[in-house]
Amino acid sequence: MIRVLIADDQDLVRGGLAALLGLEDGIEVVAEAGRGDEVVAAVEAHCPDVILLDIEMPGMSGLEVAERLPGRRVIIVTTFGRPGYLSRAMAAGVAGYVVKDAPASELAAAVRKVMAGERVIDPKLALTALTTGPSPLTQREAEVLRVAAGEATVAGIARRLFLTEGTVRNYLSSAIRKTGARNRAEAARTAESRGWL
Image 1: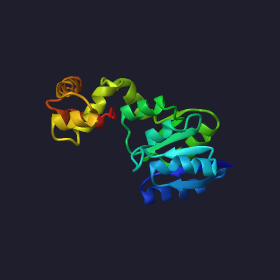
Image 2: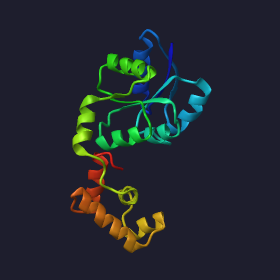
Image 3: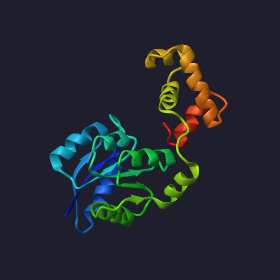
Image 4: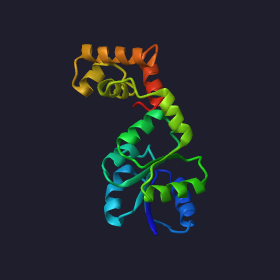
């Protein structure tokens, strides 16, 4: 019996995935979590064989959770089929990445394959990731853009990141150029849509 933990902040989605997987022979859903910051404790309490994680959850993202579960069989199950997210997931060591609009039978097959030691990646997303390439942003540029998306002024960004205003302007200018955007708001939207933030 393959023991599965499902983490998704949407009750209906989480319950639906649990119900569908519960119909499969040889798969048992042993735990569910609605927040990313609940997953590590749930893993310790229930010892699942495979962990299904959504990316965007309160408390901690699925990608951050995956980084805290080294050596575990993790499958990202998300609506966000962004190449940058796939790259980050692979860097975190996840065993699978499937999008939520895949048929239930494919998710069950992914669970079985991951349990058998295989890696499972949505083929369309893998092709997109190969053609798009990795993020051109440095870690610091991405951090500045993330903060810039919610901060109105360069001075505010500088305070939050403990940088000088001139340094923030340099990072923003570089990020704007690398994303092909006209301004920092557009750069942040572009980077977010590609999964680089």
